[in-house]
Length: 162
Image 1 (cartoon, rainbow, N blue to C red):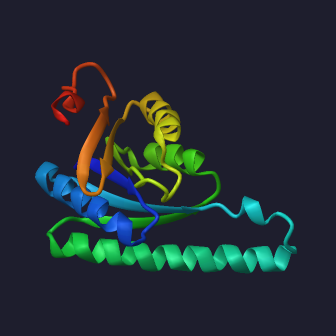
Image 2: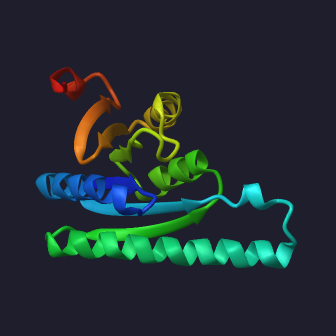
């Protein structure tokens, strides 16, 4: 069964992209994995016990948000798993791709002023994903906006996108 990975922040603006991932998983008869990655490096100045508490709280929040996405997928008849990781997003993404034999990664593009998924960061992620031999689909507001092919044998869908 093919595996689709959908990293997500889990907020309200992520729902249309999650729904798009669910539809694609259903269309491809694929297993869907929702991934949440927390990175607490910005809290390096906190005491160690407090840092552990914050990391734990972020993981619990991630599990809750992913659980809601998983419920929506299961209601649509899609097999969906959730994974919560800590650390640098790009590294966690590469690890999960390898561990789960992912074929497709769906990245949600942030709307203006929201999140960090700008064009420069998308290019970095695309390079990371393509090095693993995996296609990356970029979705914004529930619509496919770009496709980075894993190899040259797959059609380039970006030519059909306005």
